[in-house]
Length: 333
Image (cartoon, rainbow, N blue to C red; front, side, top):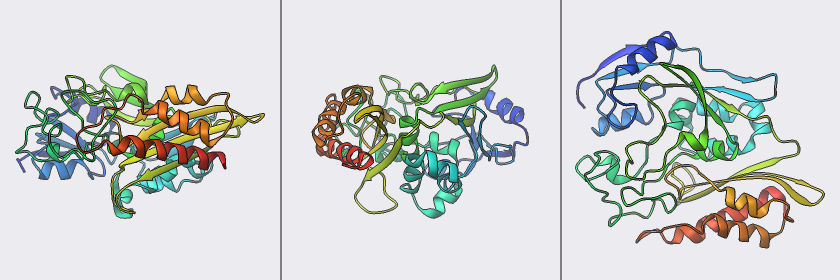
């Protein structure tokens, strides 16, 4: 690991000022924030992340979960994954988020990992994590080894000729289905970014994963007030029962009125280069009856633009089955 300096931020403005001195907030940033460190420290050990300065933000007052007067839920970026998963409001009104968090990593890691850190979790593509292999995400212009290499676990939606790396987070999939808003404090003040806009497709610049700019700090996540009568569910399919990333996952928020689907939000994990919201599948279900046939048809719509690689074509069928089963579970059919 290359030498770096360590500092502790006691106020938000100090953290922002430190990060604003970097040339980027993306891959290769000279300044990195550390909270739980469950991703950053690993990547520093692998010489994938090589910051000149690491700023500890754990002393900032961002560790609370609060229900706002308008019914929204405000989640501090330093809330630990285990605390968020077991929070009574989350379990009652946002079950899909609790289930997604508990499906991720291990109990020990969930006790350390933060909400903000999970949002910025880096891909588990082996070529990204191997500093000796070409990777456009790690070293722009070097090539994508995964396209003709070992790609069984990688993305089939939102890919490009430059990158097929998968977003690994379970939490992010649930947040996409919940239509979360990411609150960012930066040098120009605060801004609120819908989660779907927060994450970027790889295109020709896979090193740019989010809209973050130098000096930006995620301070909170806002969840809309729960939809009346809605139920939600997260289903994760993987090679083993725990401590494994998704081959395919589905987050569903679902409500009916007079026997018809009145509200549905769908996001997929394990298959997209970012948490994959499917408004097309939602549109296919809205106003329809809750039947296995309709669920399967919507799942086919969600995967119709999939572009599988040499080793992951199975994910098309797997993701369709995952979504169909998640919908049937939340609809009790």
